[in-house]
Length: 147
Image (tube, rainbow, N blue to C red; front, side, top):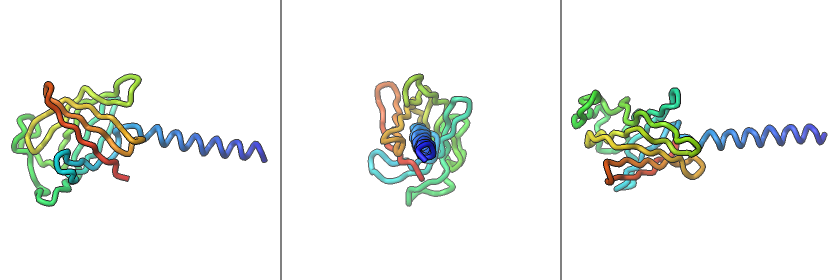
């Protein structure tokens, strides 16, 4: 009886810790929140392939936004491409020994500008701190994980 209880407790603890660890990653679906208005802007799915993180817009949530909007301000391969389905996060990698991903870029489709990126899961992975900067000028948004 004690052995069965010990095994069940071990399985439950293992499951709990693996789920908690799995959440301390930017991988998942996120609701981006405008840092100026506090309103939801979009949903972004972040994936990881061979240690490199990327993210695509899957929904536009702003009421006034057109669902078929394109990035007419972009100057790279995303110029005039639809925002839904657009890769806005590119080439971020995990910093060794930290729960931080950086080295990549994030695009603001509204402005067509790319920013240096830093992603930090916070609050047990329920939120994601997204910092974008050009030189010393930057913005920080806190995104919320979509369950």
